[in-house]
Image 1 (cartoon, rainbow, N blue to C red):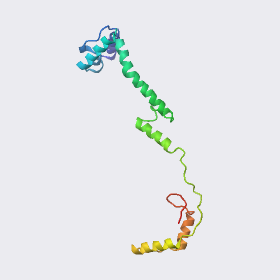
Image 2: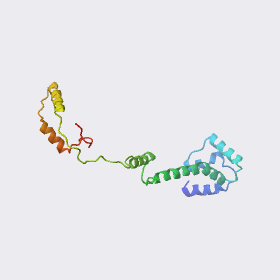
Image 3: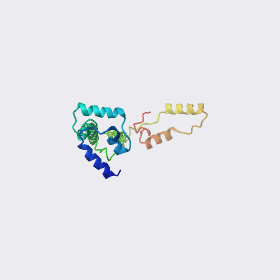
Image 4: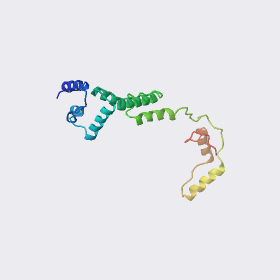
Amino acid sequence: MTRSDVFAVLVRAFSRTSTLPHSTFLAKLLRGTNISDADYKRIQFVWEHYEMKSIKDLLISYNNLDVVPFIKAIKAQRELFKRFDLDMFTDGVSPPGLSEEVMYQTCFYNLQYPSKKPAKAFSFPAKRMSGYKAQDAEAKREFNMTIKHLNDLAKKQKYLCGLYILPADC
């Protein structure tokens, strides 16, 4: 059966005033499969309960119960992502991917980097240096630094802790 044949059958089926027989239901025409007995009984119940006059009424009912809520959910989700200047159909492959984009936008909002201005100058405390010497002696390592060398290092780093860019406080 060609596409045009299927289309012609579907157009004729819209004006039909009773449900299609189970053996020739639309699913068979469209997918080469058939619907289950339970699904067919459900269609017959809906047809009678809502007093449907044509297959078109059945299709409208299906759209209202299945397609319309889906479209509303998509629209709501699309509006949510638009608030972050994201289009869910072009900016992401999946909702988790879009959510990741939102996370990157929001977690760095108003982020303030620490100031890199020099801290207050200080001289390296001799007491701390003697502690370093004791640690190295206990570990059997050589300690070849002088107070002058440590003071020069602190000055070179503008008296800032190199890891956190915070004022070093010895």
